[in-house]
Length: 516
Image (cartoon, rainbow, N blue to C red; front, side, top):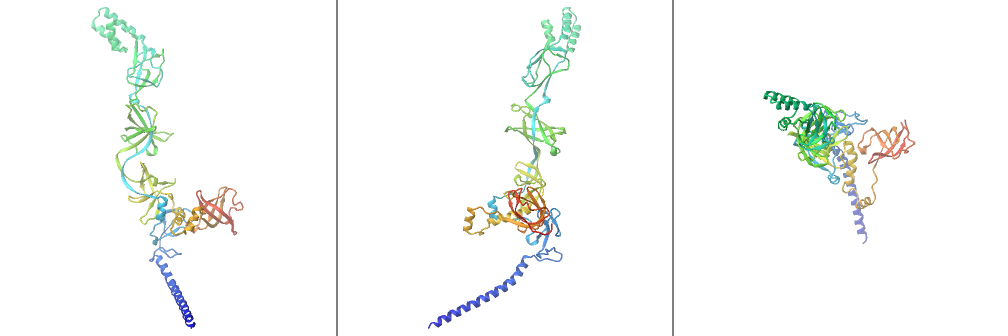
């Protein structure tokens, strides 16, 4: 009575075993069949004459050095730039040597993009300048006769004077004789011809017409004359003192006006060929940027300063309000009369390394790639690009990962993507990582010690696949000056390193034996 259920149970177990075995066999066959198909699907069919990677059999577009991705090579070999193997770029990768960044990671990093655009901007550049007295309007106070300073009204240079203010009083002894002669002829009733000849003699001796007219009215000779300032301004020169003797043509003082000033703009030598007379200048006082003064370049002064390597341009600015004084520093924007079409990118997108200038470009497939560009002048918050980009391209305008080589991108972005990948860890591990900092990832390889200093060690090492590095010679930092004392130059070693804010730091170095 209990045997029937037992028989049925044994039969069910046997049937399940049979089905499981059949499934395993079928699955094995399908896996063995699908593996070559998957490999075939991964590899791009190649035609006769195509370049093929001997390791993978995949079609190769070209080989390149990850440190200089814009230089392409037709065959594998050593990079001419660094001691490392050239890396292939496969046809099934679309020929893109850029890096693809997860969209979530882009949002976390705050990456912003900008479009390369063409815009008409006024051709110009920024410079600095200083204000000076306008020498073309300066009033020169000179003596026309031989005399003596009877009284000096001005006290010192750089004194402000009003229009018509007295500068100095002169005693001229030579004026006495011609005036007394004229009075004698007049009292003697001489004819008008003799009197006119006496007047002409007085004029020749620079006796003013007012003195001659007063001589007719009062009958008294005058030997003192006062010199006045013809314009209001500043006494830039005072060359005499009380009682000093003066001669004809001697400059007693110079008065420079303040209603108009010269602005002398210092043009860098590299921009000397761009500046032309007539260009518009908008100048702002360095102490108060809200104060603007404008004018046109009147002339380019000849010669380059040997000290500052600058060319000087001069223009006249209106100072009717007398807010400016000579010697003030001004920030000047020099621009042409007609706008010029330029290719512009945000200035923050441009990375200057010292040897080259690059921007990070976002390709149509979403990958990001560094591109070497040539830049021109700045236009506000934008920078002109003269070569390397085309209108409509997208560039990275901000982001913490802006790096100037594809190799650096490959070494950093995979770690960032891994940390941001969804489902990479369970909630329990996520909470644990929040409470304790994650350990820095380490990498290891072998190499030969080329040089040892107190701060670093240089190796010619084997490839590091985790970072996408080929064999190369590279320097790694030491954790302390006394670290790894047993390591010698020329020794073959196995070393472990990690990436830090200061570069790549060694954590372990040990000899592996063999040749030195």
